[in-house]
Image 1 (cartoon, rainbow, N blue to C red):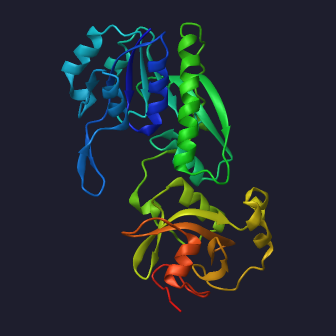
Image 2 (cartoon, rainbow, N blue to C red; image 1 turned 60 degrees about the horizontal axis):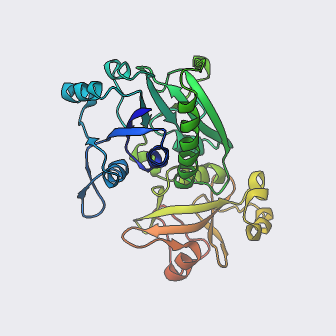
Image 3 (tube, rainbow, N blue to C red; image 1 turned 135 degrees about the vertical axis):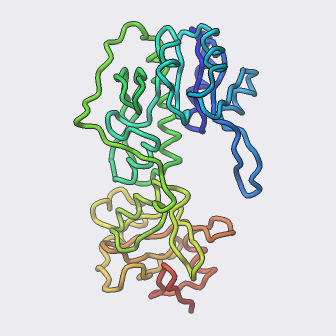
Length: 331
């Protein structure tokens, strides 16, 4: 089966790698986003999918605007591909391209459709505290993740999962589900999506990263892991990224690391949200929120390396009654 692969970020690597390792499939080439400037030095860097494709000697196309590239459309048409596989490519394929391959275009989407259609399904599932998500393969149409569904695979979300770990899990599950889907092409009765159940996962904005200590501990934990590694508060007017947290609340007590479970029963402090109310040796500071207490177990000050919450306590000589959000104090 001849395949053209559309994909860009790390989430799209495992499915492409699986195709390359399976003799049944011939990957004719890869369509990915143009090289972008990344990192502190703003060096022009290829997408992860492009790097993998070049390592395997594949043809690579990088249109700035897929809809406005008739030359690429003609090239893709000339390849006579059986199927296009699309995984987190980053642009919507126009109808003229969807109609090219014999079996249509198959998309791997990181949610249980019709929930979380859009650009960031993994992040918003975490943000909203979902306990289950999954991967869906679908036959693409011209809409945003609206095509009829082919196969699904469910995955439980653990309290310690973040966007990076969950993305890795779903990528590998999606790779297997893709092969199952391709093996059954021509035999499916695609299932239309129920529009009444559709929800959306929009592009993430920088404003989504800012911590509001008036929210509950569980909501803040979900925000930190959803937008990992970008959620931040303020420490003495310096941005402090929160990389890992644990909500010390009864609703999730059984899912906490065992050494932290005794701290769930501590009485609710009368301190204002954003105030450090306890220091757990070996773990880090516990901060009062609008509801419940949140342990900061890994943080990163702007311009510095990530560190454990306990190292931050010792390095900054953090004291109980310290406040985050620009109102901090030292011993």
